[in-house]
Length: 90
Image 1: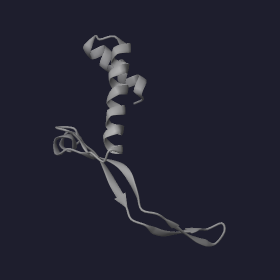
Image 2 (image 1 turned 180 degrees about the vertical axis):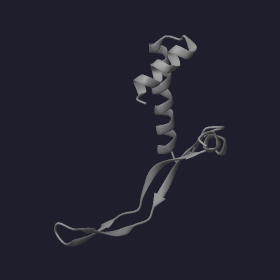
Image 3 (image 1 turned 120 degrees about the vertical axis):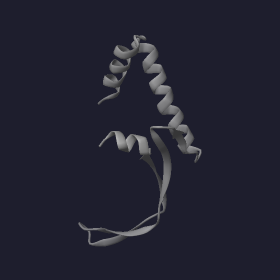
């Protein structure tokens, strides 16, 4: 599902205009990004958690040049689904 399809589905179910829904969806995504940049997890009860995970420094191989490179420690965004969400998928 794309963002446009999500907005259309919300429009069909609620009757709100697509412009307002688009603004709300964009603001939600921006708020989640800003929270993660500030190293704050976002908890959505019954849905899941957006969080940062830290990847340790590691040595990787550049196969084409046959050399080793060091990939520094870095954070990546992750989503962990809630138990209710996981149960609904079964």
